Length: 232
Image 1 (cartoon, rainbow, N blue to C red):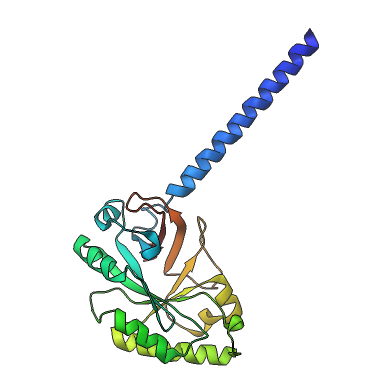
Image 2 (cartoon, rainbow, N blue to C red; image 1 turned 90 degrees about the vertical axis):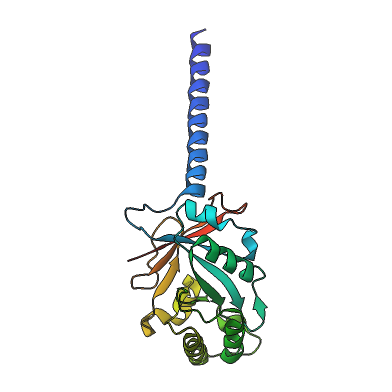
């Protein structure tokens, strides 16, 4: 009888520990889905918005603490975000500061990409500086593109875009692009880095914008949004 009681208590303890672990996992999952850095540490926060996020209520976005929104606008030489115009007007109406993002393709000539960007993004001095997302490398291009050619074409592209908007661009660097080209050491432009929950340091110098949560539930959209903070 004593042995049976001992076994019974062991199973109860194991079950209790299992429930505790499950509850802890659920809490961590919930916390990650809703987490954003402290306002006391980063008092300027916002989100990245694109067609993939579906309809977004920008007034609700502002209500949950978004001071700005960066809208996905163009990619490469031909692709444009289908929701850019709609999101642009909605953000303006809601009184949210906004900027535009171009996803740079190192396989495509700079002139064609710049033409795509300036066609969709208006010249408006009230807009935030443009952001150039540098994510993929030239390693997968059909024709070989040297490191020197990537840097040269990117410089041409930046000059044309900055001439259009009248402001220096912000470079949104992926770890892969930075590891391949080390671009952060060869430019004085502000950097945008990404790493969920923990501050990124892969550029070797301080960031200006940080994607702190790549999938934050805000209630402003059916989809979780990419949440960003700015450093003063």
